[in-house]
Length: 479
Ligand SMILES: *Cc1c(COP(=O)(O)O)cnc(C)c1O
Image (tube, rainbow, N blue to C red; front, side):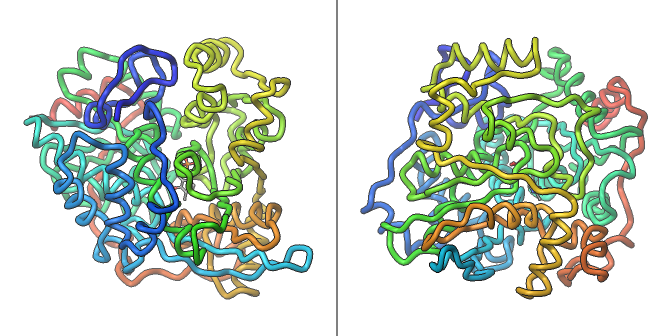
């Protein structure tokens, strides 16, 4: 399997070469040259598999430069009950039988958030940690991961990389802006290879520092700076697996169709659903749910993709979906435009840089987004979130987090008679206690292993928003 860039660069690369890279050299994102096809016989063979073995089967269609025995061992080490809390890894639970025009349309929650940091990012990041350790050891190399987080990504990365040989993590977060639980999760880690840097500023300041440091190419090369952001193909690939696992749990045979609703920000999660659908998994619709930051909802309604200025990005109660642009979206547009790299470069490289927007509304290709690729969308607001959290708890007895609530709200607008709708649960309520208290007037349930986490000793360095200071810190801690 070879990988290409969405912006038409002629190079073709193997999986392990793009594993440790971010963007392609032309600024595009990596995608496989083709999507492997999964036929009825393969689906039947995969249906009874344990999650780790299903992951191996899916991954091995895209990875041919890691020996099969090693890849299987990595999958089994990653997707174990010890790490993810249940035998199913991503258990499905029925919320209700949502009647539509008299017929049932069962609404399910697929739990992706039982990993070490209680958000779905663990599903991919845990695999990435094990793949990085494996590949770095094989090459005799080291990597210093530099990242910026507003909460979920940073903690998932730190819990995936802690104690791993050959890897250090330098994670910037805006001082005092993450939820108290998220701060406690990250700052209580005592591992030598994990460095928390709390920056006096907002998330954008953190991201600007990462860009400045990574843009200093001499420094980047000398100190082996890498990233783990959501454009990493291995992260996206890991996420493809749970679309299959959710499908198998919701259906009795492989002729049935299901739809998925995905709480979306950077379009990484739902893009994995797109890949699963392109492989032939019988998915009807992929419903993109956004919060007030409705960049994606606007596109799927109108064909206009418009990047927001920082000042126009809302700080919401589903903060992990607060985006000004959707970094993985280019992958889907590349497919939508018949994999035309020159056209994708003109839109994402030129038009966005110049005008901050492009408009596909008048093009036949835009109609394909829904008709051929199954994409529809919807939007949820703070009031919707609160009402949905309350309704789901009081009527159905299930406590959901604000991001999942956005998706449940939007999912109900897209139910189709006789067809299961699977909502991806992307975090547990304990991570966002303030909004739960606002909705329910009580504290969220807390898994026992997190009792007293806020009282643990903290390991964090406070810094001004200054790229040079961060570089100096990296140099000092790379000795
Ligand atoms: C990251 C995140 C999202 C958004 O996922 P994308 O892949 O960026 O679309 C949604 N919910 C939670 C809880 C998250 O952590």
